[in-house]
Image (cartoon, one colour):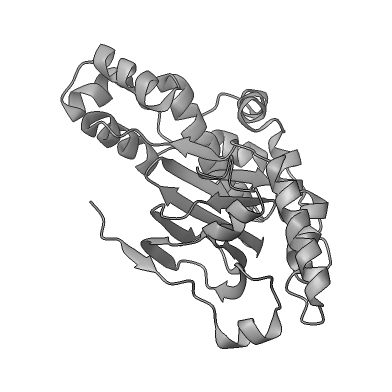
Length: 286
C-alpha cells in the first residue's frame, strides 16, 4: 500500500490575506509545473479541485479521474488521493470544513468522489472567488453559487474505475500502462494467473463494466489525456494510435463514453476562459 499522510489545509499566508472566505471555507491558489506529482495524501476537509488551466489526473482507491480544464473534481474529507500534473496547472482549490457543510446542509451526496463538468457559470464563480477585491458578502454568495452548481453537474465520462481484487487489479494496471494495445483477455488472464472466465467475472463485479467496456474506457481516457495536453494531435492520429479501424469507429466509441465527439470534447476542454478571461482558439483536426 502506498504511504499516506494527513495534510493540514495548505493555506498560504498571502492567500489568506488576499482572498476573503466565509468561516469554514478556505481558498487556495497555486500553480504547478507539468510532470509534478502530489503523492498520496488526505485532508481533514472536503475539497473542490479545479484547474483553470492545464490537465491533471486524480487517483483515488476507487479509480482514476482525468480532469481537463472543463472539469473539476470533488474529493471528500479523509479520502486518499494523489494528483499527477499532465500540463502546467493553474490550480484553484476550495476547502470545506465538515462542520460548515453540515451547517449549510450541503453534506448529503458529497461523501464520495466525483468529477463535475464545469459550466461557464461555475467557471466564472470559482475564478471570481479569487478576486482580491471581493467583499465578505460577495464571497459568501459566490460560495453558495458554486455549491448549487456542484449539486447538478456530476459527470463520470473521464473516470476509469480500478478493481481491488489483486489479480484483476494487476490486469487493469497492465492495460493502463499500455492503453493503446489490443489486450486479449485470454493472454491477460494467463499473465495474472487466472482464467479468462474468472477475470471477466471479476471485472464486471469490481468495476460494474465488462472487460471490453472497461478497456474501451481506458483507451478513451488516454485519448482525453492526449487531446487535453497535445495541441497538435489530430483525431486521425488518435484513432490510429489507439488501434481503431477508422476515424468514425473511434468517434463513435468516444461519443459513447463522453457524449461528445473527439473534436467537440477538445474544443470545450481548451476553451475554458481560465484566469485571463480569453478563450483559446479551437484546434483544427483531421
